[in-house]
Length: 369
Ligand SMILES: Cc1cc2nc3c(=O)[nH]c(=O)nc-3n(C[C@H](O)[C@H](O)[C@H](O)COP(=O)(O)OP(=O)(O)OC[C@H]3O[C@@H](n4cnc5c(N)ncnc54)[C@H](O)[C@@H]3O)c2cc1C
Image (cartoon, rainbow, N blue to C red; front, side, top):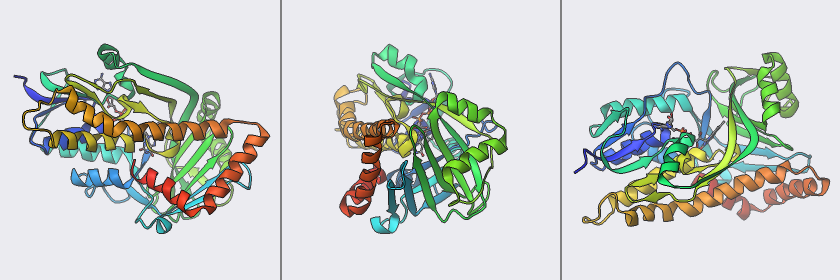
C-alpha cells in the first residue's frame, strides 16, 4: 500500500492543474515542486483556448484572476512576407465569444498556488514519495526522468530563441492579435491589459538565436526601433513595459508516454514552437483527458495499470502529433528563402483567407487542441 494515490512531479501550470483535478476526484495527491517564486515573475502571457479556460474555470482558478490578468482576442491578423500574404480570423465569423484569451502567466501560477493551499487532498513534497502512479509534468526539465523511464525523448533544436516582453502602444489594441511571418522570424503581438489597460501587448518574437541575443543586448530605444520596423504604423509607437526574457526553442516528444505506474503530460511529453500559442493548451488538454480516463475507469482497475494509461495516450497522441506537424511545417515554410516558395506561401495565405470553410476548420483546431 503506497502513501499516496498519485505523485505529480513538476509544479508548472500543467502539474498544478493536474494535482487540483485529481484531488477533485477524491484521490490523494503529492505535488513535488516548489510554488512559483514571486521575485522572478514570468513576463509571458499565454493565448489560452476555450477548452483550457473551461478546465481552469472548473478548477476555480479562472474567475479569481485579478483585473487585467486576462484579455479576450476578438480578431487576428496574420501577415506574410509580401503584401499578398494576408489572413484574418474573427470570433464573430467563428460564432464564438473569443478566438483566445490572453492570460498573465505569473497571475495564473499564483492563483493555482493559492487554490492548492486549500485543496484537501493535495500535499506538497520536495522529494519523491511512495505513490501508486507518478505523473511526470517536469516540462523540459524531465530529461533525467525520461532517461530513467526509457521514454526516448527526441528533441531537435530550432537554433532560435523566443523573446517575450510586455509592450505599451500609443494606439488601443482593440482586442486584435497580430502576427508577422517573416523569413526567418515570427513576431506576435497579443492584445493585453497590463501594464496599461487597452493599450498593451504581450510580445513573442522568435528569431535565430544570435539575432535574439543581439536584440536582448540593445538599449530599450534601439529595441523599440527594431520592433517598429516590423510592426509598422498600425499599432502606433511601441514602448517596452517590462524586462525582456528569452527561451531557446525546440521541438520534440517522448516516444513512449506511459508505462506501468507512470505517465507523461505537458512539455514533458511534447514540446512545440510557440508560433501558434498551443504548448500549454496541449498540456491542459492532457490534464482533462487523463482525469477523465481515471474518473471513468472500471472499479477493479488500478491507477498504475498500463492499459488504463494507454487510453489517455490514445486520446492525446493524434491531436498532439497534428499540432506539432502544423507548427513545425509553418515554421519551415516561412524560413525558406527561395522566391517561388515565398510567392506560393503568401498566395496560399490569401487563398485560405477567401475559403471560409477552410478558415473555420483551422480556427476550430486551434480553439480546441
Ligand atoms: C515564449 C513562449 C511563449 C509561449 N506562449 C504560449 C501560448 O501563448 N499558449 C500556449 O498554450 N503555450 C505557450 N507556450 C508554451 C508553454 O509555455 C508551455 O507549453 C507550458 O509552460 C508547459 O507547461 P508544463 O507545466 O508542462 O512545463 P513547465 O512550465 O516547464 O513546468 C515544469 C515544472 O517542473 C519543474 N521541474 C523540472 N524538473 C523537475 C524535477 N526533476 N523534479 C520536480 N520538478 C521539476 C520546473 O521547475 C517547472 O516548475 C509558450 C512558450 C514560450 C517559450
